[in-house]
Image (cartoon, rainbow, N blue to C red; front, side, top):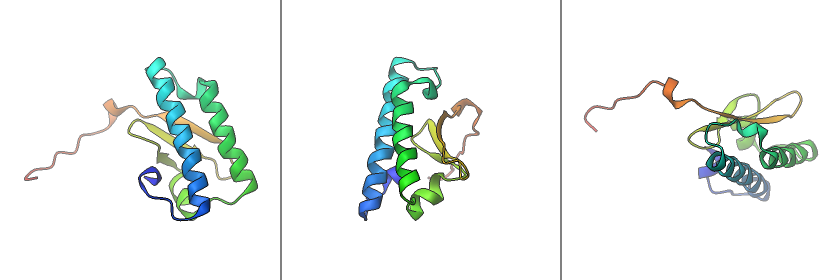
Length: 108
């Protein structure tokens, strides 16, 4: 996950700040409204618009592009971020951990 990597360049630092602000807004919304869609939060929408504006003006770093553009990348344990490759629109969705199969590791 990109949020666990230490940013090495100025571009990665800017993107890291944007991703952390989105993650924080999503978590704060989840505390107030545990089962609600994070996309209904005005703060989450504002943070996503900041990311979209950044991507409109600058090219995404290779790491951000690989993780989120055109695919759903992890934004935390329960949330995914997707950036549409054609329109540049960003969205956050909540994962349903009840539907994910468990991985049982034996001998660990």
